[in-house]
Amino acid sequence: MDDKDLLLKLANPETRNYGFNLLVREYQQKIYWLIRKMVIDHDDADDLVQEVFIKIWKNLDSFREDSRLYTWIYRIATNETLNFLRKKKNKYFLPIHDVQGELNKKLSGSSYIDGNDIQMKLQKALLTLPDKQRLVFNMKYFDDMKYEEIAEITGTSVGSLKASYHHAVKKIEEYLKNH
Amino acid sequence: MKLEDITKKNIFKVPDEYFDDLPMRIQSRIDEEKTAVHPGFDRGLIWKIAAPALAAILMIFFFINRPESDQVQSPEELLSQVSTEDVIAYLEMTDITTDDIIEEIDFSDINMEFDEGVILDLQLDEEEIDVLLDDYGIDNETL
Image (cartoon, rainbow over all chains, first blue to last red; front, top):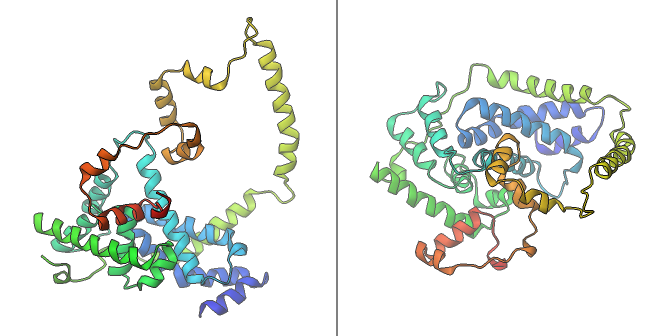
C-alpha cells in the first residue's frame, strides 16, 4: 500500500484506526532500525519507537500534505531520537555522565548484537561522532538514502550534509587506523 | 583501512516475532492513553477553578509571613540565599535538563564577552567549523 492510500484511510474517521495500523506495519521496521542504530540498546529503541508512533497518532491532524508522509514520519523519529540522546547527556546536569561510554558498553554487552570484530569496531568508531553526524552517516551509509531525502528530513542543506558525511568518513577511517 | 573494505551489515538483532507484536503493543498504549482521559473531563475548567483558589492561598500565605521590615524580597533575592550545591542537588533530583534551563534564560539581560582566542586555539578549518555549526543547529548567517 502506498502513502496516498494510507492518507485516504487516515483522513476518514471510520477507517482511521485501520489506516494507522497499516501505517505502523509499513514503517515500523524502518523507524526501529533508524532508532536502534542510534541508541544501540534494544529496550531503549523499543520504548522510543512506541513513543514515535504515539506522537504520530496524536499529530495526524497536523500533518500537511505538502510534505511527504515518509519524510514527516522520519522527521518525528529523528527529532525524538536526538532529543532522547540529548536528554540522556544533560540529565545529570554535570558533564560526568559519559553517554558514549555507556553506549560502548551496550554495544559490547548486548545479546541482540551479532557482528564480526571489524563491524564492531566500525560501530565503536561511529560512537565517536556527534549524534547528528552519526545519524546522517547511518542514513547515507546503511540505508542508502539520497542526500535530498536526508536534507528534507533533517532540514539541513545538501551541501552541509555532503560535508558532514565526508568528514564522518575521514574520522571513522582515522579511528579504524588507530584502533 | 578504508570504509569500503568493510562488509556493510546490520549487526543488530531483535527478539523473535518482535515486529509481529509491535503494532499490537502500540495500539494498546494508544488505547490506554485514550481511556486515561475521561470523556467530558475538562482540564481547562479545573484550572479555571484551581488557579484563583491557588492565587488566594498564596496571597494569604505571603500576607501572614510577610517580613516585618515591609521589604518584599524578589525571587532572585530569595534564590541568592540558596547555596550553589543545594541548587545542583535539587536539579539532580528533578527531570529538568540543561536544555530546559537554557530555554528559560533571557540572554538579552546577560553581558557575554566572546573570547575569540578559545576558537582560534581549536585550529579548525572552514569545513570543520561548518560541520560543527550544522551539528549544533546554528545558522552560519546569524553569527
